[in-house]
Length: 486
Image 1: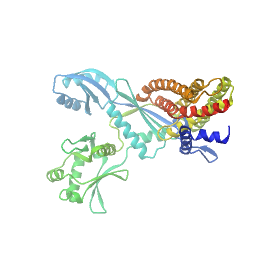
Image 2: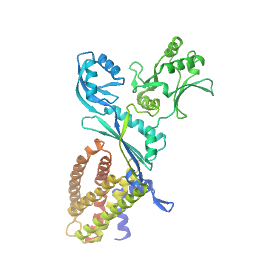
Image 3: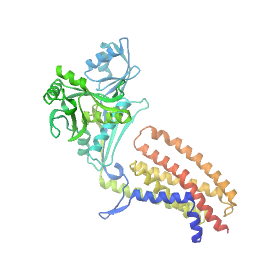
Image 4: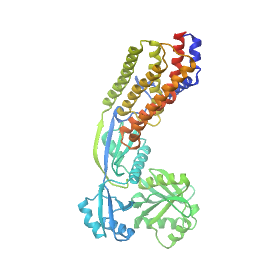
C-alpha cells in the first residue's frame, strides 16, 4: 500500500482513536529500566510481587431470634448478660460482637426472654464494610504499597472472613500492620499556638456508627469515655476556659501526630460540663455527603485502627519475591506465546499476511489499552493475567467473524454492501459480548477476591473490543482488501 493509502486509513476517527488510546496507555504503563531491570507503573498483586496474605475470621455471630418481650428491653438485657454489643441488623436478627457457641447462647437468650431461630458465625454486611474501611484506612495511612482487602460474604449476606494481601511485605510485618493500633489523643487549645493534653484513646470505651441528626441534618459520631476519662475531659474544659468560651478553646483529636478533628464544644455541652462530667459525647462533622464521609473517617480515627469485632487468623501464607519474579516472566511468556499461536492459526486459515498482521496488531493493542486502563484501579495477579489471555482469544475470534463476514472472494465488495456486512458482523459480536458480560457479572458483584479481577478484566476487554477496536479493524481491513482488489 502507498503512503497516501495508509494516511487515508489512519485519518478515520475510529482508527485514530485506537492509536491515541494506545499512546496514552503506553504513557500510563510507563515502561523503563531501573537497576538494570525492566519495570513499569503497573500495580502487581501478591502473586507477581511476592509478599504475605492473612485470612482473618470474625469472632462474632449473627443470630435470628423470637421474643415476647419489647424488643429494646430484650436487646438491652441480652447485651448485659453477654457483656458485649448486641446490634439489631434486620427483622428478628441480631449481631453479637463476641463469639459464643450456640450451646453457650441458648440458655442466655432464654433467660433474657427469647429463643434462637438461626445461628451463623460472622458479621453483617454493614460491619464487614466498616472493617474493610478501617483496614484500608490503616494500610493507606501507613503507606503500605499494593495492599488489598477483600471480605468473603456468603449467599445469606453474612461475612465470616476478611482477607488481607500485602505485596512486598513479610509475614511478621503483615501481622504487625493488621494488628497495630494508632496513638489517639484528645487535646485542648490553650492559646493560639499551644495545646494541652486531655486524654488518650484508651479512655474511649465505645465508638458508635455515623448518625444523622434529624433536626439539624448534620452527621456525627457518638463515643463514650470511661469515668476517669470523663472526669479528665471535664477538668480540662473548665481549667482552660472551654466551658465559658468554647470558640477560643476548641478540642483537637490527634491520631499518630496528625490532627483529624478540630471543633469547639457545643454550647449545650459546655453548660452541662459546669455541673458534672459527661461520658457520652457526639463529634459533629457537618451536613450532606461531605459530612457523612468525614463522619465515616472520624469513626475510624476514634477507634485508632481497632476493629469493632475481634478477629482470629484463620490462614496465612507468603509468596517469596523470587517466585513472584518467576511468575511475572512466565505470565509475559504465556501472553507472547498466546499471541504468536493465534497469529499462526489465523495465517493458516487465510494464507494472507496482509490480513493476519492487522489482526494480531489490533489484538495486541487491545491488551495494551486494557493494561493502561486497569493500571489505575486494578492489581495484576495470576487471575487477571488469565483474563488478559482470555481477552486475546475472544478478541481474535471476533476479528475472524468480522473478516469472514466482509471477505468476498479475497476482495472487498462495494462500499454499501461492505458496510451492511460489517454491521451484521458487529451485531453478532455484540450478542457474543453480551453473553460474556452476563456470565462474568455475578463474579464482579459477589466479591470472590481473585475471581473478581478475572471477571473485571474480561468484561473490560470485551467492551474495549466492541466499542473501539472492532470498528477500527473493520475500516483497516476495508482499506487493505480494497487495495488487493484494485
